Length: 552
Image 1 (cartoon, rainbow, N blue to C red):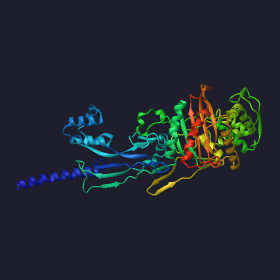
Image 2: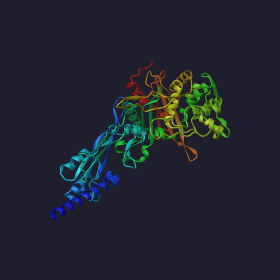
Image 3: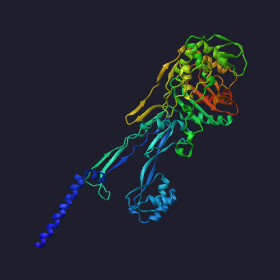
Image 4: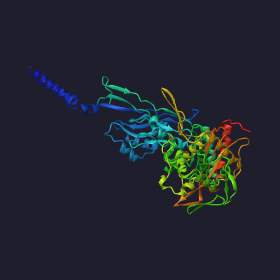
């Protein structure tokens, strides 16, 4: 009887101890209990794809793996360390530190390829495992680097888009993570009757670009050839639909491969089309002529007597070749690219209107294009302008712009007068279907009548200019060259220029507008001899690709 009472007492106190422990864990220390026994695992969404306007993939996801280890299950520590290092080359000392045997689970390396995974699995070693991951993959390599940007890691080690589309549309592309919450026992196994809660991830949206991969490829290859022949430091080509300002191609060199961005200097991540500032030179002249027509300051058939240099304050402005042609028309001012003639037009327009129209064309402000990293350019406050500033602005000197600002403003001159917001994405696609966007008008600057006059003048500028280009037979092309000296330490260096050409075709109803820019070409400093031939090389290919028939 005594033994039974002793046994009962022992069981009773054990039972009380268990109850006390449970009360402590589940009531008094409930928060710590949840932290210790309830595991929440994040479910990562799949990043959205990026496709060109015809559905060709430009950015996809590929499966990679995260190698992890459970140190307490490893029986042959030396063999595991050696085998991992033979395949992944992490370093035996580093691996030894990571395989802390006091831990249940440790991550070894992310981004393990399928081939590396197979090598690691070829020798069956206990204590190793793999989790599936996704990695950004760019099947066209560097073809559209500055449009796309790349996916890297943020400070928290999470995938994040940088630059271009990846950066600008990062939230839409990345989606929303889900989670898996489960109660687990002390051996980290799910408790059968415990809480098991799952919220699935919401994958990112697919993005459909206005970019045409075929046109992009043409532009990049021709730009490469032009940079080699001209020995230019940098180059850029932008092709757009002037009626909508949707971009058809954008390529700048030097560039990089987004799949291996870490192998490149950070300077090449810069998108010259929206981040480089330059003085546009003579490509700016049609903007001022269009403004003067709109204000009624000049007439299309007006003439100007170009007799010699013109003085503005203490400065003297000459023609680019110091030759003067006497009585010339407004169109001939553009054909001969006369700086003196442009000062005449600027004086007729008036200083207030010169500054006002520079603002109306959008200079000094971002275009709002959907690419990460755009800069606004620089436009001095009006109170800081002197008479010489108004004079030189008429021929594109003393005004700092980006190539994107320039092609947008020029489009307004030839598309009926509408300043449009440029864009690279025409639709987003998710489970609910596609959401498309239309052109966005910022403001109207000139009338259709004056726009038609400008198109005719710019066709004459190409046909009757100082340099004869290889214009495809039967096609009407309008455009203007630009050669701008680069300001260095407060003065202009005549040996360093930015050569450019901006043109459009077909002239009566433009299907495309294109800006070509070459920085510091060595074969010739003139846009007419470097950037213009590049334009016509690409235009010839576009006439065939878009099946544009000759007009004659």
